[in-house]
Image (cartoon, rainbow over all chains, first blue to last red; front, side, top):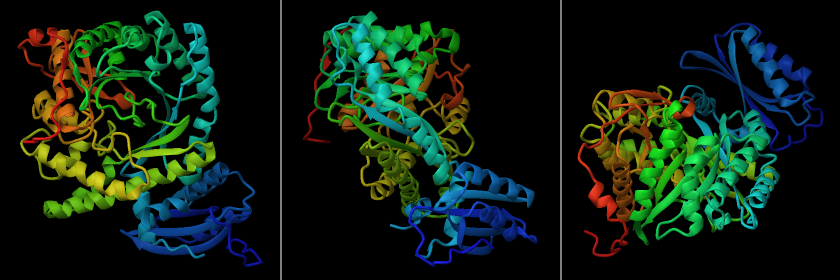
Length: 103
Length: 455
């Protein structure tokens, strides 16, 4: 699991990404993705796992306010880690979901 | 604050972007060229080049950054400018063509793929500058790649300028001839309008209207695939329920445009203009307006019932989209460009969709006869008459209509012309073999229609 911020202060608005991984369930999915995030100092705020339409689906909310990697590199690493684990990984900004599903 | 979106909602959005091809079709920056007039073509061209490159320097980069950070595909970044005939009044045709070259150079410099606004508004009559611009169109559109042109020849309040309509028939033939090697592709960059909107982000008809500020950000979205899926999931629903489903879907699609518009506007320090909530198809399977109509229960787009189905679709998209954005504008309806929509192409090839039916469809949806290929030997007067028919529909019904027609040199009915990319490929359609010469040659203006006694 990625390191949690010690202070427990509210995360900064506007720096949260939604990472989804879709594929077959197997050992080490969360560990693999979390490792990439921890190395980049991106903080996992929330995780949920579910089976949607027969596929293992993991949704992560991640705070990248103090991320040490540029976003394009973080994206690249997550996608290639996902491919290693047989998963399709997607990264989108939280506002996309807020705008589309909440008024 | 806890994130309160459910996994199912997250996956719905993901599916829209990934398998249903939802994307932002264009971020279009409108740039005013007022104040760019110079004494010569050279100084006018230089001022225009400077204004565009200065205002839009960060546009393409901002688009790429937003795409990356938000995970939303942004297909195009484009520019629209004040109708050039207004800015370059006083130049001759050669001078106007010189300005078009400067626009091309500026567009290449900032990295946009199209720049719209090589335009004239002549619905009541031509000034000398308007006439120069129209005369310059064949050269301008054959020597540039990115420059898009439009001419507004009619409006509900002014009527139809039939002199200009007749002129455009000849100009379109001339452009096709000059770009014959590429299937007459120059004509794909020219739109002839009735009631042209001043804030349309979509090419080729985009220009920055005279009531607009120095610069604005306008957004065009593309979501036929998402609407198609929603309709397919309701095979038994009655039409009222179906309309509601389309509204809900249009709302979600438009929200994405609204988000990107706000972010782009903030980052570029340019006011947010509008979201154009048009359903813009692409020549990809599943991203087609025709397929939506077929999913509603028509065997083929173009058969009886198509106009009614399209009316429902167009209205539902507007109702859902209008609720989703603070500012809706542009064309905002369903587009039915033939070459850019695989379902439309199939319908023409199958013999289900004719030019006449397309014309009827334009009465109830956005734009008009768009990306229609006709035989290369179609007379200029017939093309002018097609434009006049379409302008009459827009004039009487108080809506925007347009014609983007390509008389493909050397091709006959049933041939297929390849344009490539987003412009797709088009089957050459049949036009009437009976002449319209006498009517077109009369010239003059068709008076504005009554706005009362509406039966």
